[in-house]
Image 1 (cartoon, rainbow, N blue to C red):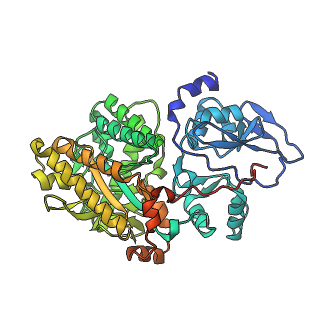
Image 2: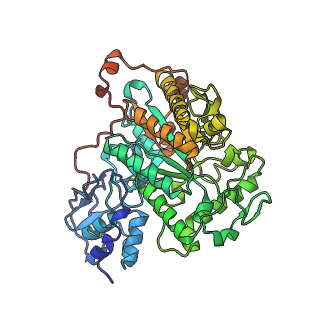
Length: 515
């Protein structure tokens, strides 16, 4: 068996850009049973062991260690690495050797397979927030009747966020919401578009401007042309049929899967755009259930189907959002979304100043109805609508500069009206297509550069918006809709650097690594 050190070198690129949240109180329990750690066997001791916080890497992560042994949590990706390296059943223990932990962790702020949630500043794996958790939160958990489970290192993230809200650990700046901006893509076929969008986010990050995209992916692009018979489209559309083609060769699928993993590990969100891109507005609940089941199978078995080595950097629990192809929605869809584990839907349309509400158990994050700034056309806040309004969805590169400016000014008008009004989230959708000589991508990038670095503006994923909305009461949402919150002061307007909303919650300074 190759050494852990040698194997880990090939996996260094798999780290996420995230942060291990803290070393919570593991209680005053003494170690009273034999603990097995990969490569070692530790006998029980009669007195508590002191674990100290240690840095895990230069990305900001840290962990609890006694100098030889590291405490969990260990993500499923870390456990799989341990199993691949021959660790066996010891990989499922709650303590590993420090060397194993560091090799399996990855290079980012959170352990491999987890993501940093910027609303609460905790790492999240699927629907679970990763601890250990500080004493104040454990005490609050116990007051809620959580019992011994409060000392676990995995809590339901929504339970944690609610607890933090109630304990005053998540606050709104001066009682007003940030101006959220949501930038998303439909499609996912073009490798150039994957690279271009990811590189843009990296360039923004290098300037100190956090920006994350949500990618609504179509499952057909992750299946090679030869295996298209694996998809039986709903509503009698037929076996092996797709409205948008397939994934091409196995090598093309592999490169696309790599892009999917890179995007997820860089903090972007992966969401569902169904499978074959059919208009499902008349589909029944059974049709939508069939489509969602096909999406899960074709995406999460994609490596196996395409005879490729490797695996996705996330599991099904990471897919929380949906946008219907052609915005084709109907009662069948809304009877299905919550049952299939979705938290939000982006398939509807509303006025630009709409604050989200839950409908049928999921958050409604609609596109906005807008009027273009220069051409005076009615559009939705999505690039294809501009493309159709400008040139009837036919290429016209001669007017590309005008189209770009019209789109950019429309986006800016949308943003300014909301930012100075009730601060409803700004929703902008794009495709992996460079229509009219890239006019719409250029406009979107210019828009992001103009607004994402402004005070109190957060360019986040839809999943993060859902986290924020889950923190609010219906009364708070109603007040936001009416714009009933303090506006920025003249001093803040004159000195924008003085305003720093949503600072990461202050963690307790005491060491909570005792066990």
